[in-house]
Length: 148
Image 1 (cartoon, rainbow, N blue to C red):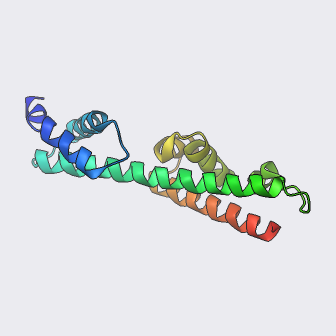
Image 2: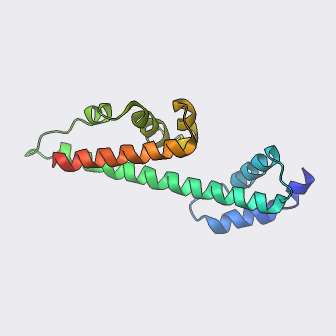
Image 3: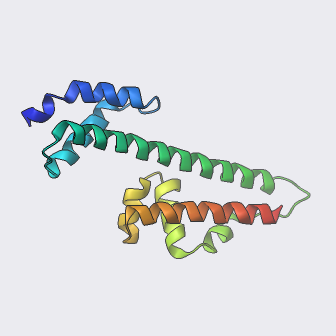
């Protein structure tokens, strides 16, 4: 573990430079160290910094998807309060999604637990979970456009 601690301060500073939105620099550094300790690599420093970078990138993608869902929810709210239009039933829209798409959207984005947790619950890979989440958002956006 002393090998890891040797790079700790440098790793925290690296994460701080990479991300303006993450406030938990030390958490990211510790998570990178934990992941690297589980998969010993002969190139410790490179592995630590690569894993930390990937954690920051994954967090960025998660934030972008949450923002997309927030925009969709705002669009739905606007439609629901316009007297000249028919109210949009969001629950019905979600029910029309594929079971896996709905599960991923609910767990990863609406509950904010992330794709890793959603993938575990759905029994699929992380990459597949991201694909399902993106597809669900696209389907909801298309339904909203048709409702207008």
